[in-house]
Image 1 (cartoon, rainbow, N blue to C red):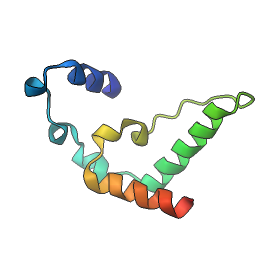
Image 2 (cartoon, one colour; image 1 turned 180 degrees about the horizontal axis):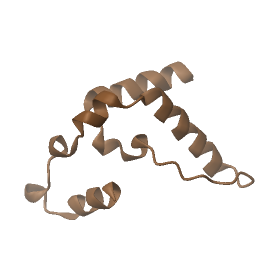
Image 3 (tube, rainbow, N blue to C red; image 1 turned 90 degrees about the horizontal axis):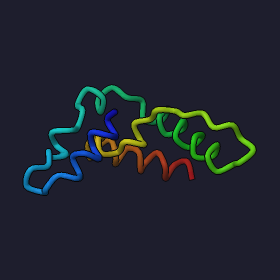
Amino acid sequence: MLDQFNRANLKREDEVQISCKEIYNDALNRNINLQDQYEDWIEQKKQMADPNESFVNINNVISYQWILDCQAKSDILMIDSREK
Protein backbone atom coordinates (compact mmCIF):
# COMPACT_ATOMS: atom_id res chain seq x y z
CA MET A 1 0.00 0.00 0.00
CA LEU A 2 2.86 2.40 0.74
CA ASP A 3 4.19 1.85 -2.77
CA GLN A 4 0.81 2.81 -4.24
CA PHE A 5 0.79 5.97 -2.13
CA ASN A 6 4.25 6.90 -3.41
CA ARG A 7 3.32 6.29 -7.06
CA ALA A 8 0.17 8.39 -6.69
CA ASN A 9 2.17 11.19 -5.09
CA LEU A 10 4.72 11.14 -7.93
CA LYS A 11 1.92 11.62 -10.48
CA ARG A 12 0.92 14.91 -8.88
CA GLU A 13 2.22 18.28 -10.04
CA ASP A 14 5.53 19.12 -8.35
CA GLU A 15 4.10 22.01 -6.37
CA VAL A 16 1.39 19.82 -4.78
CA GLN A 17 3.43 16.68 -4.17
CA ILE A 18 3.95 15.69 -0.57
CA SER A 19 7.56 16.27 0.42
CA CYS A 20 9.74 13.24 1.15
CA LYS A 21 10.39 14.72 4.59
CA GLU A 22 6.68 14.30 5.34
CA ILE A 23 6.76 10.64 4.26
CA TYR A 24 9.81 9.55 6.26
CA ASN A 25 8.83 7.33 9.15
CA ASP A 26 10.95 8.35 12.14
CA ALA A 27 9.94 5.35 14.26
CA LEU A 28 10.82 2.96 11.45
CA ASN A 29 14.14 4.70 10.74
CA ARG A 30 15.14 4.56 14.42
CA ASN A 31 14.05 1.02 15.21
CA ILE A 32 14.61 -1.12 12.13
CA ASN A 33 17.47 -3.58 11.91
CA LEU A 34 18.96 -2.54 8.58
CA GLN A 35 21.45 -5.43 8.53
CA ASP A 36 18.57 -7.95 8.65
CA GLN A 37 16.61 -5.98 6.06
CA TYR A 38 19.66 -5.87 3.78
CA GLU A 39 20.23 -9.63 4.05
CA ASP A 40 16.56 -10.35 3.27
CA TRP A 41 16.69 -7.95 0.32
CA ILE A 42 19.80 -9.65 -1.12
CA GLU A 43 18.19 -13.07 -0.70
CA GLN A 44 15.07 -11.89 -2.48
CA LYS A 45 17.13 -10.49 -5.36
CA LYS A 46 18.91 -13.86 -5.72
CA GLN A 47 15.60 -15.70 -5.76
CA MET A 48 14.21 -13.39 -8.41
CA ALA A 49 17.30 -13.85 -10.60
CA ASP A 50 17.30 -17.67 -10.45
CA PRO A 51 14.49 -19.27 -12.50
CA ASN A 52 14.92 -22.53 -10.54
CA GLU A 53 14.38 -20.80 -7.20
CA SER A 54 10.91 -20.42 -5.81
CA PHE A 55 10.27 -16.76 -5.21
CA VAL A 56 9.25 -15.63 -1.75
CA ASN A 57 7.87 -12.10 -1.58
CA ILE A 58 9.60 -10.44 1.36
CA ASN A 59 8.24 -7.05 2.31
CA ASN A 60 11.35 -5.07 2.91
CA VAL A 61 11.91 -1.39 3.66
CA ILE A 62 14.88 -1.33 1.30
CA SER A 63 12.41 -1.88 -1.52
CA TYR A 64 10.67 1.32 -0.39
CA GLN A 65 13.73 3.53 -0.12
CA TRP A 66 11.63 6.70 -0.24
CA ILE A 67 10.43 5.97 3.30
CA LEU A 68 13.99 5.95 4.67
CA ASP A 69 15.78 9.07 5.85
CA CYS A 70 19.31 10.04 4.76
CA GLN A 71 20.96 8.37 7.75
CA ALA A 72 19.26 5.02 7.07
CA LYS A 73 20.22 5.21 3.38
CA SER A 74 23.80 5.98 4.35
CA ASP A 75 23.80 3.02 6.76
CA ILE A 76 22.55 0.73 3.99
CA LEU A 77 25.38 1.88 1.72
CA MET A 78 27.88 1.14 4.49
CA ILE A 79 26.38 -2.34 5.01
CA ASP A 80 26.52 -2.96 1.25
CA SER A 81 30.17 -1.91 1.03
CA ARG A 82 31.09 -4.27 3.89
CA GLU A 83 29.26 -7.17 2.29
CA LYS A 84 31.02 -6.86 -1.07
